[in-house]
Length: 216
Image (cartoon, rainbow, N blue to C red):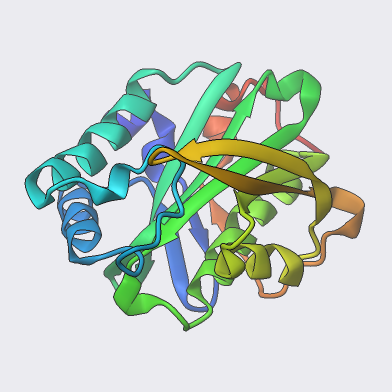
């Protein structure tokens, strides 16, 4: 089986409503179609690179290639785990967990998006809680960081709910316009999971995260 050579394919993170996993080809196609259907309101751009404004064919291809690119660049000291998020078997978004030199720094960062038709249902909070539990309880991380535009209240609201604290300001140029960003940080000592989270298939994956032995 392919998972024997790349065990991340068998990793599962579950909450009461959601399952997070690497996408199958069918899941990836559904994720691309979900992006084309809409991620955010027109006239709003939450992403620094502006990628979600591409024409439909280019946008769908970007989503697929981005996933493959993350896997193709994977190194134990520089990784980006892009998980598809399923609710009752339906793809509702994607949740990422990134790190560089994780075995030393013990710090992760997160990124995500939820299909627009699934907004307002608490999915963004629950799926980020899932990967935070993976980071803190599964990988023994000490800190998790995130960022969002200053006017992205949805993302910043999720961060507040989960206990993040302000961690500075960034300046970006988004579609030719100066945009202010907010950095936030969550320390493991301040983390309380808001929902039960189960992790399956992690131990064989630990070397891929730069961890050579199971964490206590």
